[in-house]
Length: 299
Image (cartoon, rainbow, N blue to C red; front, side, top):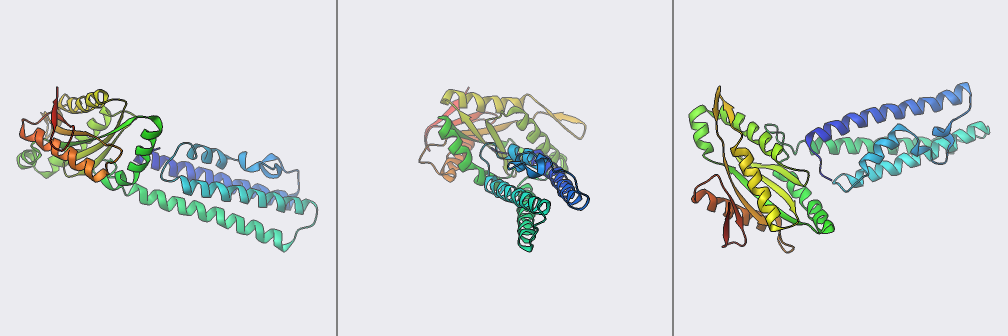
């Protein structure tokens, strides 16, 4: 499962709410201990860890396969252990058999749970830094991390993985004519247009400069070719505004299949050759590289 910058911010917000609810739960345990009363299923049920708000957040994050799965599993482990320790402590209090050992066990479980959350929050903040501040798109560094997951997902689903590189045509002319601030505006607009053109099984990254790179899942070469054409044409048909003027921005794309024995580096190199072939034969087109030498212009 891949996530975007909005998912990260949403996850941080939901995590903070879940943490707050956990502290409310811990306060409820304290009130029961000090003021008496009957503990409910959130405290004394053997599966109490499944009844709290935090468990719902965990359930959402445990779906699918993602880069953060090991950290989520660690939180889940310590969350369950903390609930088990709290239940044991509560039962010992009700039986008037509280020991220093049970108190220390709960405190240790609580600290490990909190530490696992802090570790995950640090991960989310570092993950967020792998997104481009200008366009909001994930950067190439994140693509290198996500590539094995996406490749494995394609293999499980018996789908092919294609790689598409797109380079904005005559971007230097835009900078020379309107200035670098206008160039930044164009990059932001192009990123939004390309993102709008992509589907759930198509992951877009900012590769660097005026280049963008996408990982496309397809059942056939024809479907991949249609995706490459669709994305290039979508950009060409959506003009952008620069200094109150509307200009047509196009890009040239290089598309290639990522074969089973391909490295990401070799696939990028082949797609790059296809893209430059497109630049040299007219721009505003998508070229499919069947090999390092065989290029097909998609019409």
